[in-house]
Image 1: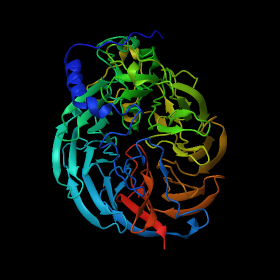
Image 2: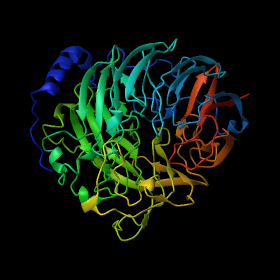
Image 3: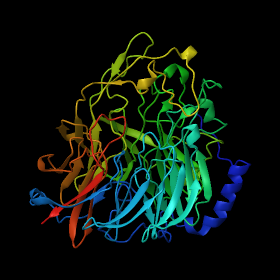
Image 4: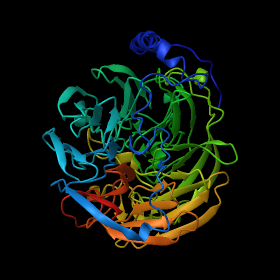
Length: 562
């Protein structure tokens, strides 16, 4: 692909960027890796905390705690339980800072004692009409403040000590079909959040950097710009087929030394009608390296090309340095593959505005490793009959991504084994509706296809981080949507939709312990220190309306050694 020279654009975007450049000039001068981290760069200082959705800015989901080991993990017992009282979707990744756990539902934010589960405060942000999915992945924490999105498109900050609302802004247009389920990430005076909704007619993704002080917009990056060479890759756009897709509905990762934000993006739509989006359709189904100062894109790769199966690159990449010295962004997609993406070639000085040029393709896929059943993905979807493919639209790796064990150089990935059958509408007569699902199927009651009546369960797989070679795998009878966490004690922790919380020996995959949360486990699994000991928290509750599961109120169960 031809690389165009970097240039600045005039207009609103550039005016915002010039102001931001003056504001952040000195603070960002040390983020290139040639000096100390800027003030405010750390979410917290304590090593026993779990300060972001994925544990660290790098998103590696590694806990340095080692009190619980393969030798004593069989002694884990429930310590306490916190019931939210909410029966909606529960996909939250708990954040733990200074002995306090922060968690969310669609409309509520809770602070609880991380050692006893006693509630400290609750904040309610009620809105109507409620979001259909009703999912929220959690908060970002920085300098005593919490930040989160809401199903009404609002984004707000809370005082972490009291739950008092500090400010609130509107980031997404819910009438157009946008939403804000992702757990944001906050750093260096900025909080980063993007919108979901790329399966809805005419909705494209945007990444926003907001001021942590008052929420005003510092920059906004359009995943699909309104003009320019990136927009030209949407080769069949028209008023009845507007660019749709590239939403961001899971958290991001951040290389704090380089000042680069790593953003996974969603599928192109109509999801299943490849004839209506035959070109590359950048930057859908991609991983973007974004300059955190400006919102310009410094590098990209599109792991999932010519997608017609709703196969988002959904999970946040784990930014790691492997035993072999490779700088990698390890991400997993709904297509049932782990992607080992080398990131050593990305340079912040190469960053370009999305409406000015296509970024250099300096993120490079070095390996692709299967994480679940992959079948019939080359069979063209058609208007004549149903075509079954695996993973389906609810398969592969969803909102929780890989974990990395630096000691053994192993990447751990969970995935769902569930297939989908799709019959297309005639592309010539397909009509979209603002705010409505834009997937291209014949039966709008099953907008994301007909899921198999019985799923094939779930997989937890371990791979060599340098080569992608499989080391071991575990098969569960139910999908594994819950987060995966690895600890310095040699353990891998996760949960499944049967409500099990499970601990494995990291080196071999041997199951060492199984507990229960009493609800489908599709949320976070975190390890932290509180009350003078290492604890493990597992979330349970409804996965979402798309998952046929029985559940009661959402809850957090905390396990520890007695």
